[in-house]
Image (cartoon, rainbow, N blue to C red; front, side, top):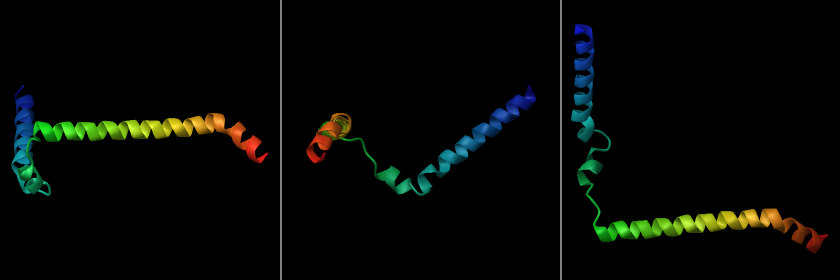
Length: 79
């Protein structure tokens, strides 16, 4: 039982050491500058992301459609 407690305390010490160093590493400055986006910024990001998803999906569907049904068109055209 005591051995289990010592392991628990050791894990706790390691976690605390990592959290102490978090603001001082490579990403410390970025984490200090980060802030919560305003509702307007968040809605713009959501809209732009949605437009990108629709565009990528439409492009993928167009490529699928051409590969699936375009073969006979190209063979009759150049055939």
